[in-house]
Image 1 (cartoon, rainbow, N blue to C red):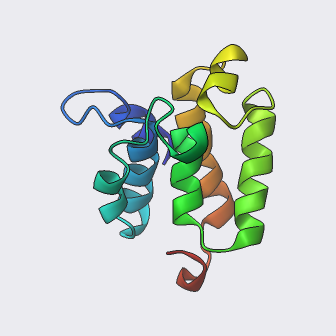
Image 2 (image 1 turned 135 degrees about the vertical axis):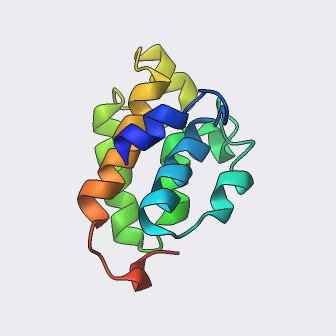
Image 3 (image 1 turned 180 degrees about the vertical axis):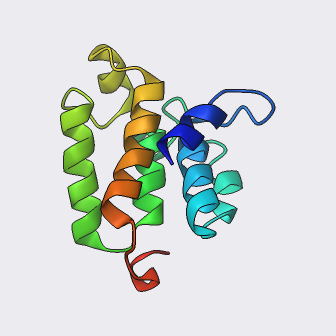
Length: 120
């Protein structure tokens, strides 16, 4: 999933934003949530609610379990210099592509084989 997300992030022909790239990787792997790719069109570059990183926002939209959401947020903050918002991540000099790769990789590592009930 990580490779898929990095491949479609800002690259032709799709030129997906960070949130869309993570959603696209998830949909390609699981066949679920394909609708999110379009729904997340405005969630890149700080456009997600509260300015949260779009890659993290996509993970939050995919997960239905509150505990899993918290685990993802904690892991993401650790990987993104302690920040969860685009501005803070950029100030920590973490590249957007790194956030995209981390978010997609986290989903794959932590949810591979989970029951569908836990996923929207």
